[in-house]
Amino acid sequence: MKTTTKLRMLIGSFFMLILFVGCKNETKTETTSSSTANTKEVKRQGQAFIEDDGSTPNVLQIAIGSPDHTTLVAAVQAAELENALVNAGPLMVFAPTNAAFDALPEGTVATLLKPENKGDLANILKYHVTPGNYSKDFLKKFKKLGQANNQDVMVEVKGDDVYVGGAKILGSVKGGNGIVHVIDKVMLPPSE
Image (cartoon, rainbow, N blue to C red):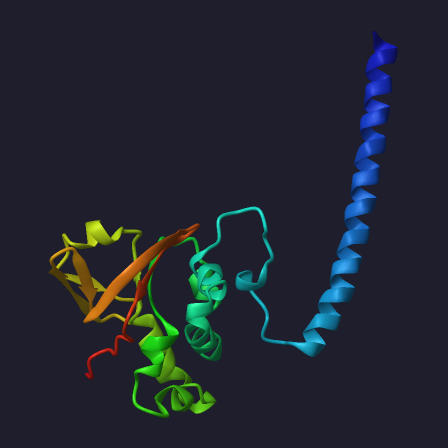
């Protein structure tokens, strides 16, 4: 019996040593490739850029994967808000389509995407995010929502349709950290 226990401990120690050495080598490899990646693209830092093929997509990954939200994704990247959208949440993101951005006055998007307008852009984008994970039907119970930019947005119900900040919810996609409500209009926060 003592021989069996010693043998198990010896084998267990051997596997632990292999695991330790294997992890140590992976760390070196990651550091090398990470430092190479950092010289090419410095801004891709934080939890928004961790690759994970096994879990339910978060709200940012849903937007990135949608061909109808390329302008929204470009705006999120310009405002450097990627990491905020992958937090545990729950988050409700009201995601304007590309057509909604195209409906803004000519030059508005290009102006907002300039680095000197990053603060204004971030304020507008935060006006599209609120804590929670409510379906379109559940939103019918609300009169207003408190947004991430510390302003309120009004909720209206017209028949079966729900409007948030004047934008109609066209569809919804559940994510791993909340829900994305696709909307037909860019919501602009009220001026203070």
